[in-house]
Length: 71
Image (cartoon, rainbow, N blue to C red; front, side, top):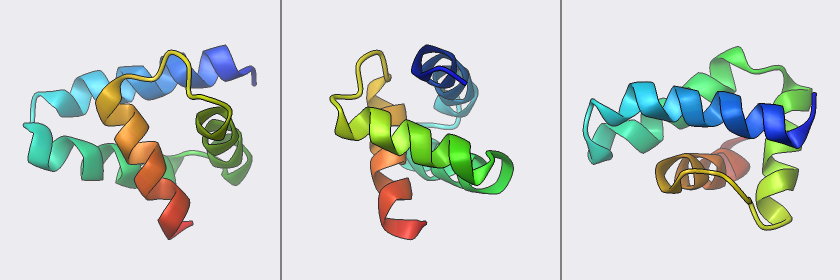
């Protein structure tokens, strides 16, 4: 899966969780990625973030950052 596809999917997840407010959105996004994304997808989105994270929404960027420490 391309980084563009992963960014698009992650941002869609972020849009869903954004309605829960900022305090719950970032942990919710990170938990969703951890539970439902294949380990290869998680590794790829973390690598994308490490390469600059172009296109990631701010709350999604924060969730991927949190994901890096909990994998």
